[in-house]
Length: 355
Ligand code: SF4
Image (cartoon, rainbow, N blue to C red; front, side, top):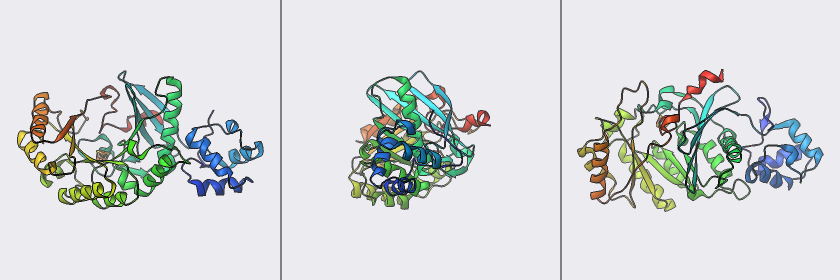
């Protein structure tokens, strides 16, 4: 049974310096911080007793003073399409969702960075909740440990994640410092050692934060949600729209600094932004962008949003117009609808069972 406590500080989310302080406070030697990091992150071990290269005494002291997890899985739901959604309850009762998607050799985790979200996108269930709070770096990383446990029970190959998308509940760049710390530990050789190029950070477009991320020296992929072709149509769906011009300039800067392709996400909403004129305007906006990629996401039904899913015909026409303009376009399959795990649908329906 993994160690889990509401009141103890968790070791998960600590960087090497912090782990060193924890280890030495418990009577260990500074070099043992790396051994502990390996158990926590590379081996994803949730039992102090299994950390056999640490002395019994050190393990006991660590267990006495620190938790391994501060959150726990309260529900799991499978769609039968290779998608599993976990409801995770945080120490203060907040519930977030984490999604695992298997598709052939690709296993992708979709993780949350906030409980709720402040951006208020009209097509998004998380946006309707408002922001409850930011997740700590530890709470962001604990999602990987819960997924690791899930994958162990699945007994399938690959037996670990191949990709990570930071696309769950919350606006990642709004929780910038905690996100950065979590991704640093995810990527670090002493941490999870997960390649930055296999991680995609998805943002609604906070221009200054995109620039800040570009300057951190990482090679994360960036996905920017556009959803509108001018500020009027964009603001109708994203009330916190920072302005297309600024967002596109920040996206170019990200590409220049990191040489990583930027993907533009465009949620197609029936009768709102799925017409041919919008498709031509979108092509104009992105066609000069270095290696422009557009993901079209037919809107999934969200109760109470008053917005409609687009007709298949308009999705196809929209994609065709972009393709003809030389834009690299993908239409995202509606995976996970049955568990309401599709983009914009991570919703605290589990609040009811969390008490
Ligand atoms: S789509 Fe993303 S940024 Fe917008 S409200 Fe939902 S979680 Fe927040």
